[in-house]
Structures are given as structure tokens and as C-alpha cells.
Image (cartoon, rainbow, N blue to C red):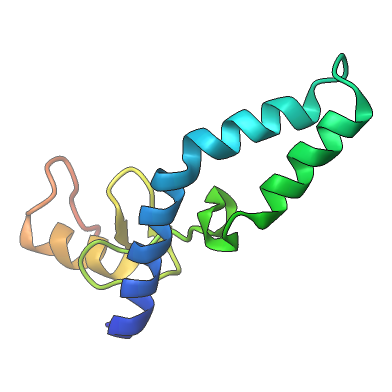
Length: 101
């Protein structure tokens, strides 16, 4: 089980990303538009830099929904490899059979 603080930090980042998504997209569009004057693009970059760092989607990290484990994460199921094995053994994931021979 991951530390509660790490899980909460990730939730906080997710909330910030959602909150600033439209503002970031608008500023990035201005900053990357070659047809706009250089000064206007530079101002957009400065405004983008003043936004909170944790509002960037790049800073998000996938975590297991059940345990909070950050590594060995299956995107499709949103669980870690350990929980995938446990749930598969218990028959909780349809179509998944644990191999044994």
C-alpha cells in the first residue's frame, strides 16, 4: 500500500490539471502560433510559466486504484500487476485465467 500522502498529492495534481486545462491550452496555442508577433508569443510563454507547476498534465503519474502502487500499472484495468494477479485468481476479472501447470 502506498503512502496516503502520495495518493492525496496525486489527487491534488489531478484536480489542478483539470482546473487549468483550458487556460493552458489557450496559452499554448498562442505561444506556438507562428503567425502571431514574437512579443505576443513571449507574453503567452511568461503567463504559462506563472501557472502552477502541478497543473501540467505531464506531472501526473498513473497509480493503482486499489493500492496506490505507482509501478507496473495496467492502463486498461487501472490496477497494478499484483492486484491484477490477485483479482484474476479470485475470478473477479472476466476473461482472465491465471496460468498454472
